[in-house]
Image 1 (cartoon, one colour):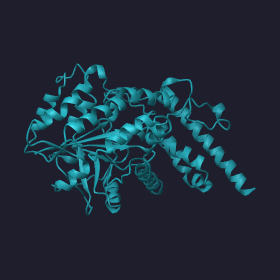
Image 2 (cartoon, one colour; image 1 turned 60 degrees about the horizontal axis):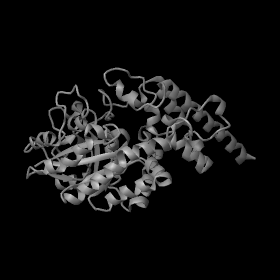
Image 3 (cartoon, one colour; image 1 turned 180 degrees about the horizontal axis):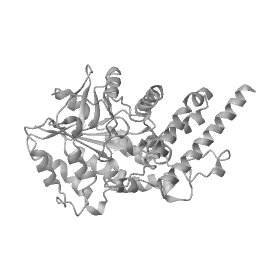
Image 4 (cartoon, helix red, strand yellow; image 1 turned 120 degrees about the horizontal axis):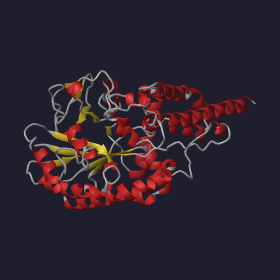
Length: 404
């Protein structure tokens, strides 16, 4: 029997405003743009909440009440939780109602949705701790499954998560390391003792997340009964089908007018029409199913692009320059013990900043253009580097005050 594991990523970054060189040393509010809609974080989150979060939460709460077998899971960045707490308590309350059903699992990740694991283990661990504390405070639960930013995964990360006591870790079910094997089984990361690995079925996930409204797609229109039939065909050839996607899929990336909410509303009924199908959370999946094999991933794998590596975030010179600069400040930033400087520095680690600098324009280039609020990757880079330079000036002033 294949169990369906629905996991949704909930994240909205703090986008840097058009921060000019003339602002360096004078303006420390890097993320507060009151004029431009495409760079005004509060306006963007208001739009996403109305189009996606609120209607999706309302629908899923109804579905959880209607179908006792249904389970879902979320990974919230700490950045989105802070924004919801400050400006959108109604939205946060609607997420809490879902968690209160007892059939929603919350996953662990970095608080600042960063790539810190690959640049600073101490900083990474600090952010994971901050995220755990935030999730406990907001939802009253402690996560036991880890999901790294951008699904970035490797053997090294799995070993870290295993030592920290996590029951499972998530990754992209990419063909390069899977070979002949299927992503629809539970695996064991090579070199680990207890932790298990859940792999995204990227084909079925992307059918919903990316191809749902694409009229040129051979399977358009995608209906719930058609999708459920694909799932049911895997009976006898899989333990768990991991459908991982951004929560904004519902209403923002795929619009209400294209029928995405009708699809979601009918999906549980169609999935459960087959008596062998059910739903599980990641934690339930690894508790129920044994690992079928070991998986060896000695390199970094992510969800993005045809390469499934970190190149969407670190693949060009401007991205490498920006990320090198921000992590080079770590010791000086932390020594200040200035909570405002530390917070701003960590917000500059949000992976989206580097994604906006991506210059890859080929078959999957439209994905990068869709998520980029700047006129060009170079505009994103200029604003970012100016903000980083301002952090450097603040560090120098903090040191002078300390030595005075």
